[in-house]
Length: 236
Image 1: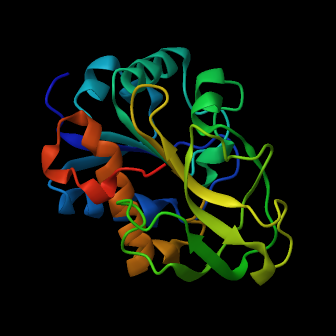
Image 2 (image 1 turned 180 degrees about the vertical axis):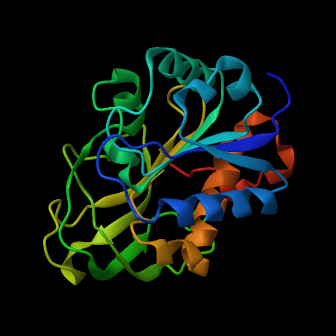
């Protein structure tokens, strides 16, 4: 693989568009800079070419909704991930590319809905992962508590965060409600976090630390050895 040189934040929407996207994109660019990486944002699917993606440390799908890629950009992104590229999917990216089987396999489920925005508690399942190490083990948070069409937990998927449905109203999964998970099943590193609905989220130190760790972990597989940490690997 060529030397990686940056993070590409993709923000196109073809369905509901979150008001938090500008704040999220700015935060992700700042966090990438903190990891020593350049960053850029785009809503142009033609920017996702094989040559461009080969230079990416990580690609981020930030609250993308609906059909946001073209056939060539899907092919380029799939090749990138299968060759070891990192992909971070944030919040409404669970509702992106509904008819693309490869992305469905990466995500392992699909967005089903959510109750109203409200406070609740997030439990950290793995406190040694880069994306969760900075977080309190019992994290008070306000967000849209996403439900999914099928249960995200599988033997080959590492769950990082789960919602405590007893602390909010309208949850759809019961006692085991994953909110963030990761795996390396398709060649590269994939991490999804369901959190990040509000613009204020992206200024919150804990959530920024969560995203920074997610960026660092997805980047590790692309030759950025400085970010490798024994605490950063999933523990099954």
